[in-house]
Image (cartoon, rainbow, N blue to C red; front, side):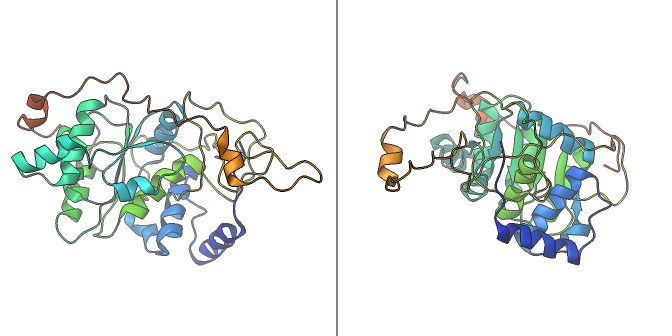
Length: 307
């Protein structure tokens, strides 16, 4: 479905491309880098982000297939508006882990989410370096880790550990980052290039996932091609936003001729209640012993050094 790009966003991208040259980047890497710069107004991310095009292509396919998205904090989750996000930072089990083990609340939330979800999720870490460290040590195998926590304490080290782990990832080398940047990286994989003409044929949507809303996207950049990088432009998926054209499946129907504009209460009166998440419906509750167990030794890298 078509996503209506606001003129301000379009103008912002035109200014961005006049200031930095991203034309030589692979398509999804370019989408991530530009979304990060767009979200932060910081053009130095062009040389700071680190990612591999093959990892991004695989993550796009996973998202289109309905892979769950997990965030480390409510701030990070708030920036992802096109789909439902799992965030366990406020879970009572996370509070218990914080009291018993002394984990940060974000790290405890990641441990709880990891006990509930299997492999193949996309993890978005933008707030706490400790959450990224916890995910690397204990988390299930991810489809992608967006590791862009900000901070003077532990952020650089956690992001270096992510690069050393061999996990498919988007990260950066410096202390900067943050929830808005991490959310932007994820949204880049949902929306692609906002200045690109939408495809005539829409890709199928995953069951139970109807994209909506605007978002930002962010990623990192590889200065040289790495193992597994492949050229080519994968199919993009555009998502509907709040400015959907009236009459489209995700927008309100146009008013009849001569009829007064519909009131918000009229539009919402017949709406069914929101469906509960089906991501975790069948997941058994985590056993306390699983959450409190000592962390296993870090996993060995699954790819060669240099990623």
